[in-house]
Image (cartoon, rainbow, N blue to C red; front, side, top):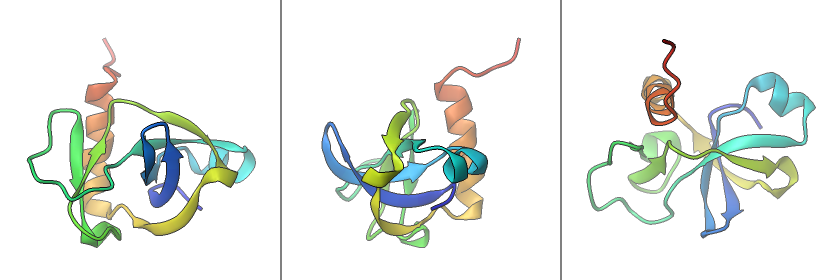
Length: 107
């Protein structure tokens, strides 16, 4: 398990793909990591301001919306079924979305 991996988790909304976004040291040493929620259904619309679209290149079965405005704390033991990993080209976009959506601007 590593940063950018896409795995499955039982979110409050149900079982969905999750992108692991925690720092590699946390993933290696701590029982809880941060993940982002992705839709389990095919994206049928453009991504909104708080989302990006991941797809087959990332290991998913189809274009999938990933929400970047809410982090979930998850026990690593609850993560299962590795799907793939966010491709390098989309990692930068995902980080930029996180910065914007969470208002992590430095004054």
